Image (cartoon, rainbow, N blue to C red; front, side):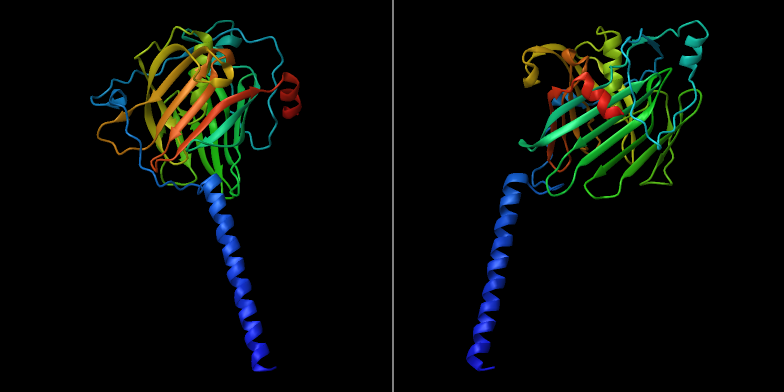
Length: 333
């Protein structure tokens, strides 16, 4: 091969690599521009409103038992799964089967439904997320799927029963994209308490109090209490709920703004909402700020959820529409 031909092939090959690199950089730049960098944010944690900072020790009241309201006559269905392992009848069930009803806070589970939400990351609209809530008798399944381009979905699932203190998760798991799922298992005893077990921290097995929720079951616990009686949690009141994440157990304090007629859920227009905001302790490092809006028109199911992470990234779900009952039945079969 002549030196001239060799130089020509060398420069041609080099030019192709430069062109390929330029195309990759261009595509990557457009992806970042339109979708952001998954799980990364260059912002800083947002400033917490002064009225959401706990500056004194709050007295946490013991958990209150519930009294189930009359269930709907509509047939409700629960998606079957080989992984579900539900606990035996609770003292709440035994009391009802014995002809008496347990005294306590009025409580009524929302009916099975499929809700669709617009998913936003730092204000940028992404694909539509889906929330599946199925309930049958004394068991429930909550499944949330939030698509994320090029990474895979964010998936959250909670399964469990209803005991004497309300919704009682037995398993909670979460998965981001192609990463392995992370599990939190509730090993409850006959009183509603028990132990927690975490796939991320096998050595961490804290005791749990009755009424302990996971990050998403707490929304349905609140909805069930409001369906039982909307006279609870007036403006400025604080509700304490022990909450489990994939590797932690903490007492979360939610400040209620009471019933407000607003358009905080645009797709519903002007309607009655309940806004709860997670409070932060003054001396604790910032973790996340959580705001939830429960909507009367959705039987107090969440109309909007916003979470501001420690990185400064804001994740938000805003109600879009509700599936027809026929779609719910088809999905559950």
